[in-house]
Image 1 (cartoon, one colour):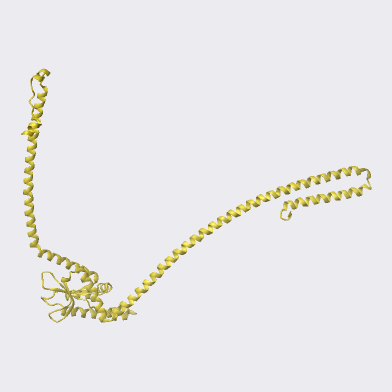
Image 2 (cartoon, rainbow, N blue to C red; image 1 turned 90 degrees about the horizontal axis):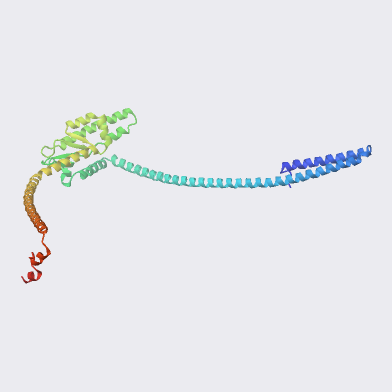
Length: 381
């Protein structure tokens, strides 16, 4: 038994030792005192015997106490073991849940990282495309081809093939990027897709106000010159309309002109040159397409009117036949009414015959006249 591990047992053992020592000291004292008072030996012996008995009882109580303490200590140990087991299970479950949540979070993080990688690749591809576009726009010839392709795509999407001609040569020998045929006239709308972009790029990339002002002046001069060239080269009376279109492949340049250079827009109107962006150009193309459809409808007006007349004739014929059919239905209705009247009269006659009171003898004397001939007579006839 480990007394150091159980303070209660240690205290009890200490008490027993103290009582034993006290008894021993008492016995020695009594023994030494026996020389002085020998007549009290018997009484001291009885007291020692009682002390010894009490010591034995105390040892028994201490033994029972030790047994009870060990039993209680075992139950406490079991309770502690159960608590530790429950805590271990809860801790394990919590760790498992945290592991699952961590796994899900890591999986979601991997998916997001994959999306971010894909977005990064898309951004890199866009950067490549932008650099390619910049290289295209940096070259004047390539820039013109880019504007023409953008314009051609819009025209092909909005108009039928017979409504336009690309790279049309005018009677003056000048070649226009596109000419759009106008319905009911021999004139066409001239469209130019070349725009001076170098000065605009200088203006956008200017590092300070002075450089920006210088680039803006150059941009204004280039646009004015381009408007004059279109007005002088591509407006041919009797061959083109009195207004030409200057197509800008960029909405940004269009917004810059209308926001900061309204005088250039007004000069274009004065020179019968309308500046259009991809959006406004598409709106104009849809308007032209609607006019073409209206012209085709007017061209087909005679055919439509003839078909309507034929359809009206068919309607009148249908009305006539419906009237005839109504008359026939009326005759059929009258015939049915006559049949119903005849059946009513036959019913009244039958009721009257049924009301006649004739005895059986009279019925035997008078042979009934059949209303319908016998079957053999019908067969013979």
